[in-house]
Image 1 (cartoon, rainbow, N blue to C red):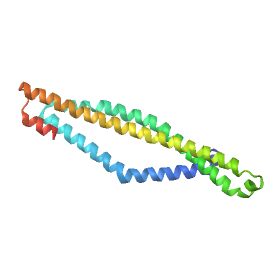
Image 2: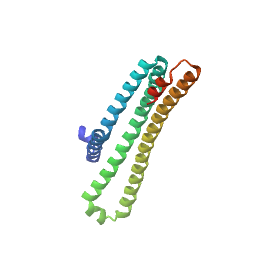
Image 3: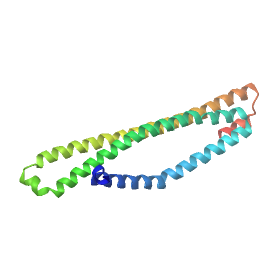
Length: 176
């Protein structure tokens, strides 16, 4: 039953994309994630210690960031499944054509197989582009949220310094 539901191309695609994703996570993603989490915790704790209001702004930035992450997970799940299915179809077509090269030539199916393979490759190219676009949207959105939070902290802190309710050194420490 398993082998009827999962073709060899789909299994190959799944194993290669899973291994590649794991490699990317271990090479870059895990270190980046730990750095971001530790930085956020340190900066929020320092801001909360220096000034409760400025720290509250930093902590409040978690809400849009969390929303963005959840939105990305849902959209990326669909896009990456479609990409995996598309590459599996390319692999299956390639394997079937190579394994049956004699019948393909005997029945003069080279042009038809080439057209089918081209269509599958274009589908894979499109779904891969969709996956890259989703990642770009996430990166842009997360940076926008982070930069907006920093700008809000700086602007509100500057206003409070001008008002005289916050020492300039506290704002400088909060921004650094």
